[in-house]
Image 1: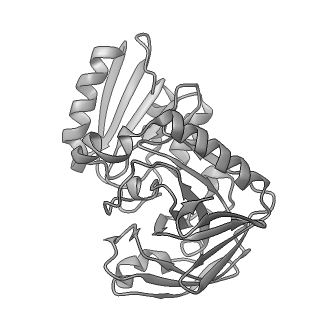
Image 2: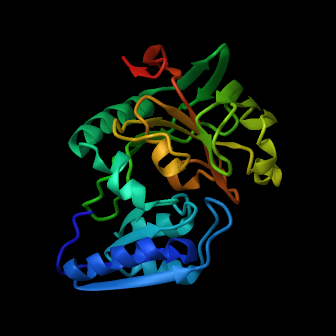
Image 3: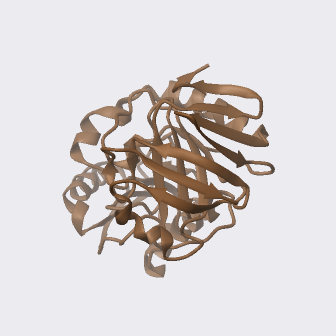
Length: 298
């Protein structure tokens, strides 16, 4: 985060992550001019909007580190904090193990380099195609811009997940069709013992099959919730499959798709959730270029 001595730092957390937040707060006090610790009740689902009071507090500091139970990455509070110049690190589901092992220990010079290359390819592409085990999902990307999330946020208005390592984009909401297996992990479930099969027509889920699909009822509360939101590509070679989406979606050579809100990164769908699912060892085309073959960057 590149925190400087003259800066103000906010550690934002909830009741479930208070132990980690306390450690971050104690460390921030050793570095920054002012440090604040704000505790709220856990949000119910990823992407749920934050109270306006929290948003105003986020805009008033130089750096926000959010150690929370579920993700606030795709919220208005985070977007508006970035617009005000605040640097934001979102750490949904963070554990002490994740501080000691895995994605956060990557060579971030390498992560940045690959992430920027893939982001540029996403921006230039008009469509994407994911293939896996006989299933195909086609995504219209025309006119949408890729987003780089390298996990390094040292300049005003930069932000994203920490740890990170992904390039992602909001597909055209009505322009996604096909079937795909989600076989790594899924927000709301965790690690998947058996794959979920999702069928999408004109950007909306029309069928979802799997042993734990009953845990994803939030998707069908509204049309917006089961609308495609994101295509992401993992670029962090140190990331592991843990069941915590914060690390899982960064795994080198994986692809993830998400449903729900995408207004925070160039989309038009505002929902009450943002749920990601990890696809292991996919083959991925951007236009006519095969970018991944069975999870291997070409």
